[in-house]
Image (tube, rainbow, N blue to C red; front, side, top):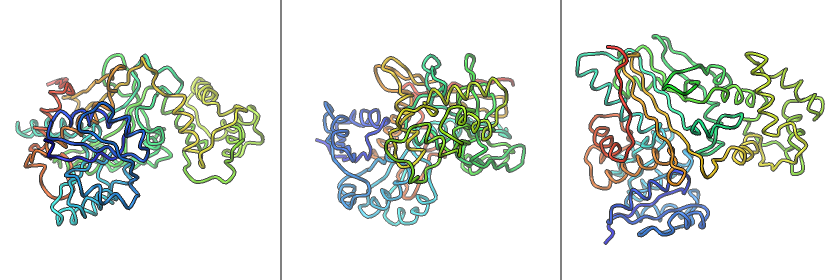
Length: 441
């Protein structure tokens, strides 16, 4: 008889592996909640002990649904996590998210402790799996009396090479809007003892070739704020700490052009109305003289910088492929970012026989590497959904089972050996494992 009730908020790409993992335990009963009932129903179809619910996280009904479950897994956009946590504090319900702990979430730490609930975060792939192996290797180096002076960690959720067959060299295994915005973050990190800050508009210009494995041409760029990981990973001796993202060669330059042309703007545009063409949008966004391709290209040349004439040709070809110079009517979504995101979701979706790829690598002082190369299954889970969803499912089950290091009231993330070792062992049993190599001794 089911005894453990779990509420899953969100029915996106990573929900299915998480739900399937949790349903292995006959004591678990799941409610999958989504704004659109049919989406939740499709997810629970044929799954025992799983029911669908129509629920918006902004609804006043959230409190009662959260309170009637032991754990709530928040797979909704991270901006709503604080609302979910506040609701869980009222209902004394545990919380699990796959997201970084935001300042808004951190502010609820004292209230979570007072309510006696665990709010467990960063149990996806990046963040999540990355922590499990960073903590392992750093601990082993320290146990041998060594020091970690340099730490690099790069992750990419990408199409497999054979599926990277468009000018963007990218397909979306998660929200196109989120993926684009992730390439427009500012970045802060330590490099040879110096604190370095890169403004968001300059981030793509900092993408550089980075070797991970034979057969790949990756560019890497820093992501968000790497500086707290000196403390989180207990490496006060480190003078270089850089966490970042991987993309195939060609992607950062094209995204940089989209940024320079104003397409990553999420502010409402009154002139963005039904019936407008892509060329007219491009003209309005850039101030081009007319919507003719000749005038639009002149403006691209003014606003964008190119490393070579070949790169210029590739970027212009990419913009044409997106249809940004065309007289085709656009489906508008209030702002430039959402209008472009919807179009790219259509252009850059995985086809039924295509695989995605998750690559994650830690490098420690160029002597030790720890690498994950995980391909998706066209007939099963994508690599992204598997690595995020199963990690989340394992962590949730451990919380439900009363695993002591996780059952600590407050806002938590997996930064300790006591949490990471058992979680990593269960993850490896699911076929998700980083391979360690000593490059030189």
